[in-house]
Length: 103
Length: 154
Image (cartoon, rainbow over all chains, first blue to last red; front, side, top):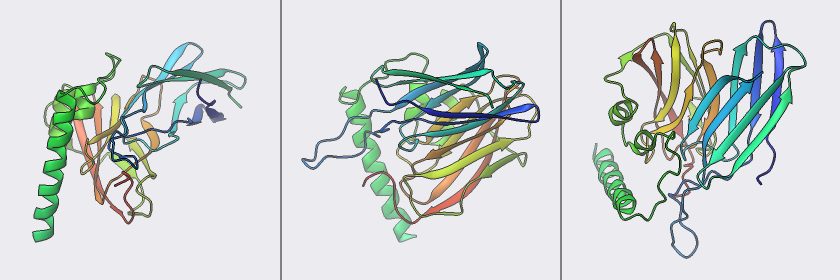
C-alpha cells in the first residue's frame, strides 16, 4: 500500500476547494538506470474524487505528471463536515483511497 | 534553424525507438480499459484529439492557462487551466515537445468548476496546450513555457 494522500478541502462561499497531494514516483518509462536499462513506466493512471457519493472529478494521468502529483479543483456545493473521498489507481494496479472532511 | 532541424531529427528517432518498444511488448500495456492509452501514446495534438474522439480544435480566448513563463525545473512545472466556456466537459493538458504530448486529462462533471491545476514534467522548452471540450466541441489555448533544466531525466 502506497503512502497516504494529503487532502485539504475548504469551503469558500458556495464552492469547495480541494487540494490533493499524492505520493507516487511517477516513473516515465523514458529514464535509464545506471546499467543502461530502461526503467519501466510506473505512474498513477486514474484519479477519482467523490463528494457524498457523487463524482466531482475524474482525471487520467500520463507519465508526464510530476512526481508526487498535486491536483487542485473545486466544486459547487459541499458543507462543513462533508467528506471528500479521493482514490487513485496506478499502472501496477495499486490503489489508494483517502478522505478529508470539508472545513 | 539548423538547431531546430537537429532537434527534429533527434526527437524523431527517439519516437521510433519508443514505438518499436511498444510493439515488441517491452513497455507494459495499460491494464485498464478506461485509461485512454491511444491518447496518452499520441505524439502530437492532432493525434491526441483523434484518440479522444474529436476533430480539429478551435482557438479560444476563454481558456486561461496559469503557468510560469520560465520554469527553472522542468520536473515540476505548475500548470492551471481555467475555462470560461459553457458546458465544459473535460480539460486536457498537452506538452507539445514531450515524448507523448498528453500529460493529464480531467473530466469535469456538472457542478465542478472548470478550473483545475496540477504539476507536469517538461523535457524542454515547449508550447503547452490546454484542450477544453465544451458542448461536444474542442477548443484550445496555448502558452509557451521555457525550461532551463529538463525534467525527463535525460
